[in-house]
Image 1 (cartoon, helix red, strand yellow):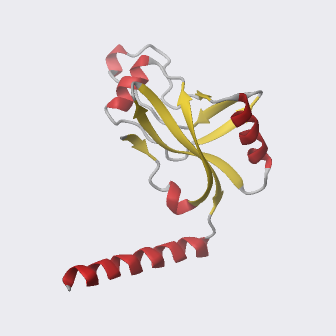
Image 2: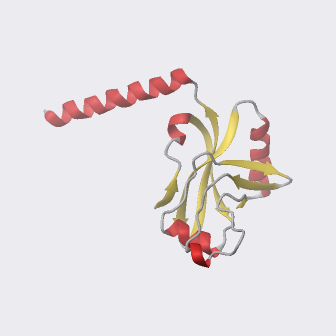
Length: 147
């Protein structure tokens, strides 16, 4: 069950490879995510120095009055991946036109996981084609439903 999703990701990017990563969070962030608060819009992943970080994800405090002073809801969060996966992500990061984006945050048992993907940004004409295909499928469904 998804807690937070990046809804625009499938529209704006063409997915190449998907990975599952653990994420290092504070307790107040875990509680906030379980309440389905947060956003992945504009977030991305960087791999530096043998570590991977989630940059720009917004996870608000669970109880604002009990939050420690200086809490930053957009702080960089460490992703828990194997050395091999991190090396692969670092290699993909250097290729032109590829970026690493978070798609969703979800529960897996008692753990919170992040689904990340290596993606290529779509051009404007690709986005229009996606919209046309979606509209055509919707129209077919309506026609089949009415028969």
